[in-house]
Image 1 (tube, rainbow, N blue to C red):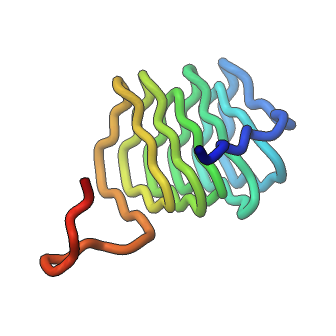
Image 2 (image 1 turned 180 degrees about the vertical axis):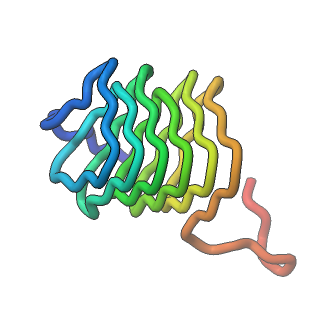
Length: 124
């Protein structure tokens, strides 16, 4: 069984009740529990959007964990997780995707990897 890599310790927090508009770059793991509008970019980092968090704009990170809401365009080089009670609206490009029961995904999803065609063996 493949062991999942645990997110790093959260190094930065945009707390509940705070609003930020602009561009955010970071290393490690950032958690947003407030409102963020703009661009978030970090090739090797994890973004956690907490239950009270809302991100609107463009996101480009290695891993995305959503408990709140994300609206916009997200390019994730690794795993995207939409947890129960979360909402994603927009375009999501990701290598891997997990949507828990109760998570909402409304929009377009593009995933890396082979595409099965008519001549390919169907997966069980």
